[in-house]
Length: 221
Image 1 (cartoon, one colour):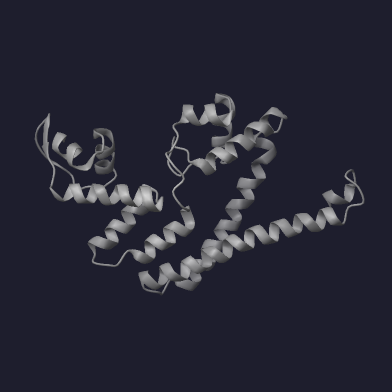
Image 2 (tube, helix red, strand yellow):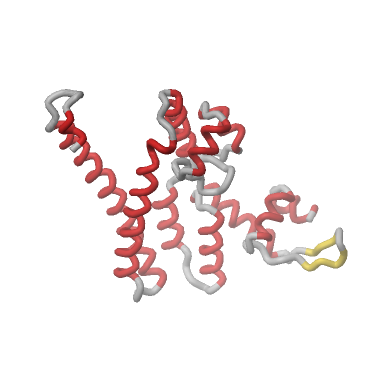
């Protein structure tokens, strides 16, 4: 383990986690305190680190990319799809306490918004800048008396939209080879993201445009 840490520049906890998640070959244990790691772990750990830092892929998707490489498949289409879905690198991830400090959320508020699916970090207990921006908005809402129960419809209706999007993707790609599937899914992802923003914003704009004043009950109908 010490040699692997020195060769990869990664801490023991990270390397053990990679191994637990099946991202690294399991070590050969010779005693309770001694294990030997395949030399291939060095390059594989570096590749995982690169995919995390340069492409911002979560570990579950990195595992898919590595498995494709192991099968001899070119991973470029999968990486491009991952970048489109998960975005660009946004800096170091925040632990729960640092996230809470920077967002202004109390422990109670944070736990309630997490439980309600209104804060959705890609990895449990690790928050990126997108999570932080939403956390700050939710802290302001909480301060005004708006809590998870008031906002639960975002998760509920969001789940329905994503279910429909996934069903459409499946119907269009189920018979395609993996590389073509990834390319088609990339185009569908771009279209879905545009549709979400356009349709919901336009519905909101039409509703407001049709109101005579801010207290107009017609805005609710």
